[in-house]
Length: 267
Image: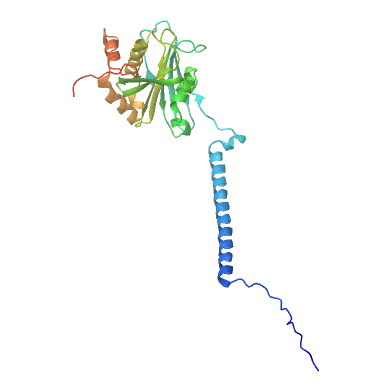
C-alpha cells in the first residue's frame, strides 16, 4: 500500500517584481544615463569654446609673433599743442601705430627718463581689441602708478565736453603731485588722456589740464577722417584763449570736484 507523505514538499519560490516597478527602474536608469551624456556634451562644448577663445586672445603666440604697437617714425604729426608755461621743458612728439589700424599721437613735456611734467595722448581707436580695455589702467601705467592708486578727482568741462579727472590716492597735494584726465568719444572712436604735474596745488593742475585740452589743435584737417575733422570743427567755438589774463582762472572755476562740489546758475 502507497503511503503519501504527511508533509508536502516545499516548493522553491522567487519573488516577482511588479511590471510597473520594473518599468519605473528602467526609466530612472535611462534618464540618469541621458543626463550624464547631456552634461558631458555641455562640458565638451565649454572646453572647445574656451580653447577657441584662448587661441583668438593670443594662443597663437607660440607661432609667428604678431606685431603690436610700433613706433611710426615716418608718420606726420596730426596735432599741435603749445604750453606757454613750460618754456624750459623739452617737447617730444611720438606716433604709435597698430597693424589693425589704431594710432596714438603722444605729446610730452619733460625728459623721458623721468616722468614728464605733462603728457597728452590722442588715441584714434581702431579694430584692435585692446582699444576699450581698462583705460584707467593704461593711464596709470603711463603715469608710473598701479591702477588701484588712481581715484576719481572730479570732472572738468572742456571744448570736447566733460572730462574725468583722476588723482593718485594717498598722495598729498603739493609740488610733485599729478592730475590725470580721461575723455572717450564715441564718434569718431577717440580717447584723449594724459596728465599734468604743473603747479603746487590741485587747482593749478586742473586749470592746466583745461588749457591743454583747449590748446589742442588738429593739423591739416583735410587729410584726416571726416568725423575727426567734424569733431574739432564743432569744438572750435568752445575754445578758450588760455593766454588771455584771467581765462585760466575762469576755466578752473567751471570745474566740479568730489571734494568741492559746486552748483552754478539757477533752475
